[in-house]
Length: 382
Ligand code: SF4
Image 1 (tube, rainbow, N blue to C red):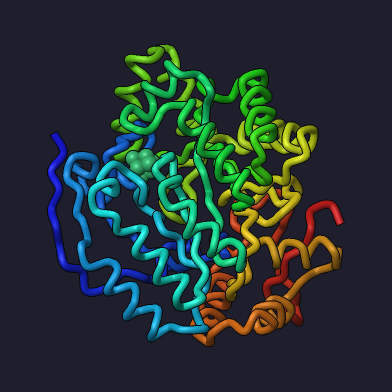
Image 2: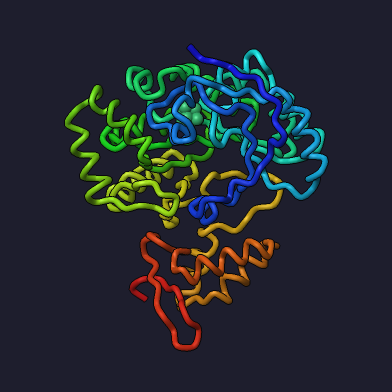
């Protein structure tokens, strides 16, 4: 049974740049979660780490619309695109009753402010009129998640989320309404939804339905994710437990957010396959916090909304690749300034540079010490 707790929130829109990993990779650093908790209960859910009953107790911020109005008024004109659903699905079943997302979207429209919706639910279609109005002004796009067309597998990994058919229908209807639909094939679960034939079927299907961009990344494992996911693997296929231990704990590494990442060779191989399939089916492609920028045909999320963006590691990476000679902190700060970043941002950038973690685990980039310039980065092999 799901418990719904109605609460009055003091704040709604907040920056999400606390983790270094988000700070390095994400050009969008604002989020607003109208619900805290998510009843879809996906077996790989990263948000599960926030509290053990995340999928059974949902906090409903019943004053979300009023708070959004107040905050958008204060922030007017200065806001970056806001992610409506960074740690929860905004269109989970509770939204059918509370209709808060719709009210919040109307406030974004009234204040001419950009936002994007990350969801797995066809309930998003209920608000197609307001989303359409926003997207015609480049103020809204939908990031829609679908990681398999296999109905049985979907039931096992995302038990309480809408069916494959309903999701495909949502992608079709959103696309027909000319709303940008970027598909998250995320996460790739090694040995489960990474079969090339399955991926091709999925990518060709979403391309036919009108999607324009794919974002993908491979499952990351925290202690909590692993505890839950290991139980799932035991039921799905026990032999995979060993394979995951090898891929993640023997050959993988810890990222800056504390997640265990799968072996780089595996991640690159599967994401390259997806990138090639996207090319074949005329979709653009980007990875999420993977660092394989050579595979990108568009920025990670593929969003082209109005509003300010922060520079991401991809901007610095491109500079290194285009320049093909050692790059100093001064060069990087110069790029950051061109994005009108704050002093606080540039202080963080300097710290990351001196700690040697700005390009940590990014394939193809090496760090060296230069007598005059101090630490410099360059493309490996040059
Ligand atoms: S939809 Fe997202 S937030 Fe909700 S359970 Fe699934 S992974 Fe977690």
